[in-house]
Length: 430
Ligand code: HEC
Ligand code: HEC
Ligand code: HEC
Image (cartoon, rainbow, N blue to C red):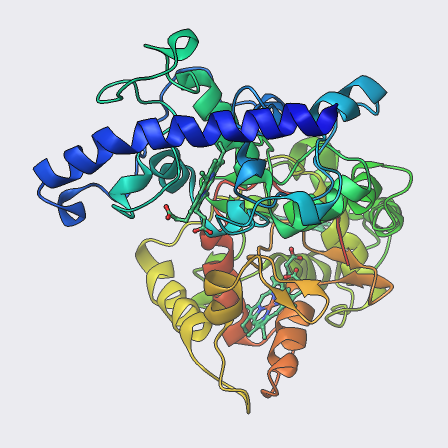
């Protein structure tokens, strides 16, 4: 029963394609050739953003997209529910060996293609390959001898194209893992996550749902332990002057709000950059008349986590102009410079291959808006400088001392690179 429907449909599709192919052949002869065609269609066809879940249905729907005829699709499409009806109707061809191989598998297509490229592939596959047998999904013009019921209608409406694009963009490594865990495709490019700003993606967006929840849960987030310790230190009387941070700064929720997003910044006194940890230590030595905390000590991490968390949700916005400019340039040069036995730059992993896997681990853009972060692999909180040293070591390069000028300069470049991303402190990472 199912088989005959399927066969009938396949025959219908292929008849359709034969019918469709004639006008294209003509069209191509009249054209100047593919080199004059645009490479992509950057503007969405509709005002309403594509909906990935609708797109998934369209793609699996025999009446509409039915991409499975030619392309293998990821086995486990994201189902919003486990309703058996959905499974029966949309999750056709449960076994991969029944998916078409005329086109390449569409696994991971969202990582390989942008929305603009996918639109072109769907609207005008022949712009890319004049001999393509893939249907143009939103074309009526130039078609010849179309079956009556379909005449004058494109295979997909403009909205359906956008939905399909939205769905295709979710077909990424992360998404297929997410699917297994029964999640929504939150790594889709259409996601409206605060941790994604103009192509800049926080490490949060690469996390599993489980780890995101860990970060978002104020009680579960292990970094909150340091925040609480920092709060206690803030109020504690200490040093020769017998004062507390609170003696001068009062309630951190107001006095420290928005402070983290401005650091590192130019310090006129030393005529170089100063970062948040160094700023805290300056108050300790000069105001409290107490000893500076060593870099990466529990106490300094606690205070920087506490002060940093007062800016939670506020976008990074460092000043790189004026006197900060040369330090910014130095930091940028550090980021781009190859180093170590493996001869790699930060930019190789975090700009060019972000989203790829290094062994088992997906490389993120290496953003710093979560710091200090609790890394599960470290089982503790760590500063940006500890992370820089870790990455340097990974490529067999000499790490610098925590607090080194070059790392503070790098920190400024990194903060600018992640400008607009909201502070997540304390972030949770793998
Ligand atoms: C009739 C077969 C056929 C159908 C149906 C079809 N495609 Fe294709 N598709 C191809 C072929 C063949 C290619 C290889 C490029 C070419 O020749 O145009 C391709 C290429 C692609 C590509 C680029 C893949 C890559 O790895 O470079 C995407 C994306 C794509 N198709 C998406 C879709 C989607 C989404 C649908 C359903 C809405 C669909 N295709 C339906 C045959 C098909
Ligand atoms: C060989 C690849 C590689 C190089 C080169 C590299 N890193 Fe990383 N980096 C990683 C991996 C893997 C992680 C952990 C997974 C992740 O968050 O990307 C990471 C994480 C980070 C993070 C934490 C991101 C977050 O969301 O918590 C920062 C910041 C970072 N790197 C900065 C740098 C800087 C600065 C350099 C150059 C000094 C650098 N990395 C060089 C692979 C690299
Ligand atoms: C005796 C008063 C005093 C004490 C005690 C004190 N500070 Fe300060 N703090 C200051 C002054 C003054 C400034 C400079 C204000 C400015 O930059 O306009 C400052 C600046 C700061 C800044 C930078 C604020 C910004 O807007 O850039 C931070 C962060 C900070 N203090 C943290 C601390 C911490 C943490 C403690 C406790 C360890 C502490 N301070 C204790 C007086 C104090």
